[in-house]
Amino acid sequence: MERTAGALDAGILVRTFLRTYFVGAAFNTRGLQTVGLALAMEPGLKALYPDPGQQRLAWARYLKIYNTHPLWTPFLTGVFLGLESRIAQGGFPAAMLEQVKSTMVFTLSAVGDAFFGGALTPLWALATACLLASGHAWTAFFLSAALFAALFAFKLATFILGYRQGFAALSRIRGWGLVDWARRIKVINGALLVVLWALVWPSDMDPAFWASGVALTLGLAFVAARFRISREFLAGLGIAAGLYFLWTRI
Image (cartoon, rainbow, N blue to C red):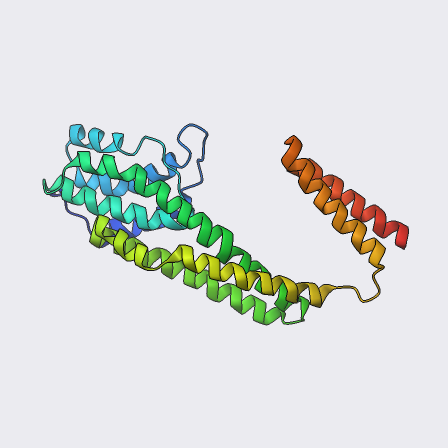
């Protein structure tokens, strides 16, 4: 039976959501995450536009540059899919999607980098390190399992939100104040870093040895920023120097 334009069933939505996990699988320097986005949109676009001509026009909207934080891709894919459903039914102009899409994508990318990349991920790492350093391995395991489940729930919930509300969902996202939360979490991260230092600090470390290590780290950071030398190369030098100092102490 021929599918009616604008019709999407639960199976297509599930396939679309699961494909968002592969958004970075074909990352390239030309379109960045474009191939991953097109892969996620494929089931929906084929269902919404049975006519080959209309389908080619729809595909063209997703063959341009696309790059955002991976945790926002389910939300954006849901927004695009919901709007494409309205476009297929003639209730929304395709030109408006083109005008707003790039601005929305890069704005959310900045928010994602600040909240997820700059605050939440370090919080996760520092909390896990503190738990492991204090001998609570199982607590660290269950914390990670809970956070993985929370991220999955976040992706699914925002995908549904974007699909149902389209551009209007941006107002909901803005109301969460994620940038402000990122600042608060970074303060917590600073405190956790102090706790981690207290847990792993060797009680018998020579102050001069500690000071030389700090000076080396700061010096490598300055050289990397000032002379644009590969950070991987400098990190290798730092690790080699640290191993040498440890060997001389032993």
